[in-house]
Image (tube, rainbow over all chains, first blue to last red; front, side, top):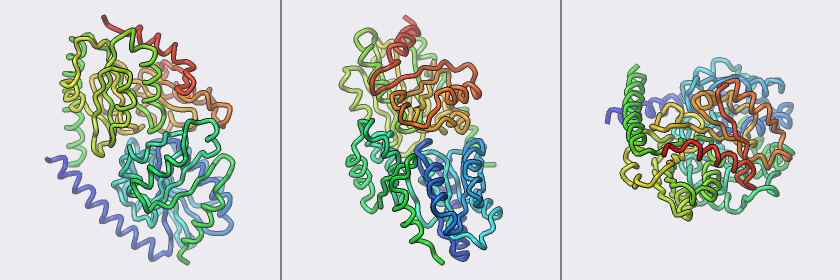
Length: 216
Length: 216
């Protein structure tokens, strides 16, 4: 019981700081996306395709969480945007306090959109509100059609689903309709985008939707 | 500090029960594999290929952990072996107590090998000894070459690495040498197998090695 009590306190404290973050982002007029997926589903690659298309049109910042290494931040640095790497040192998810600490490292005067790239994990990040406006879960065609059913909480908590690696469909025993139906079974409100971060298919539509959410 | 203290107690308790499990498996002459990977890297598919080849030669049991659904146990049930599904109800990893509870559901009189399929998660399961003899981490060619560096603890804690989905290599910007070198940088002792659960390449070699570990 002691463990459950500690967990409850951690989540309550996390929610409180997430609300502070949300108020801060609101005041600054920043729209915040929290990107969640398995390791290797393509969070960073999709961000790269988005940055290529949008970095000269809108002002974008990124906070990127990893268990170890600053590889992802280095990949994103070449787009000349503000990137903050958060290393969790073994931690399996980002929490709202890490984002609050990251806020101090970004100049929000000229930021319209902040992407938060979470740690690659389809389980633990689902419980941790970071203060985002929109939660995007990314799955890839290579992961198996039943992932939404098996990792339901994260699909249930998301607003948007991106299905990545559609370029690999001809070589896989995957069924796009199954992936979509299973996702909608868990969360009928999910908005779905189908993309390939490798060849860019579907990324323009995703970018148009992203721009449409800007507050100012 | 309270949280760290609780974590320390949880891990100490887990290690204690894992040792009990290990003594039990030793007494029963069962060799135990703990399979870890991201969601969708192919744990269940690889198990299916192994069962097709070995189920009539040796006696195999499986305990399979999932956040939700009994899909994996149902997939494995058709091989006429003993399968126990452990549903964690949101929990992000298996622990030694879950395995201890599962032990009561298996008749070990005629089991030579027990496979434990962990929850799909490249972070949290690394800290939790289950009482296994051998820890196998599975990565797939689609996940990106740098995963061993970014999710180092799990690669560091493993004895064996299986690189799955080698059939997709012609369609990916993946570099097999990079995956292997990055893995060996984290853990130079890793024994590495390259396989395709889809077309069966490399599975025979894996099965020969698995049989070689049997105790009786």
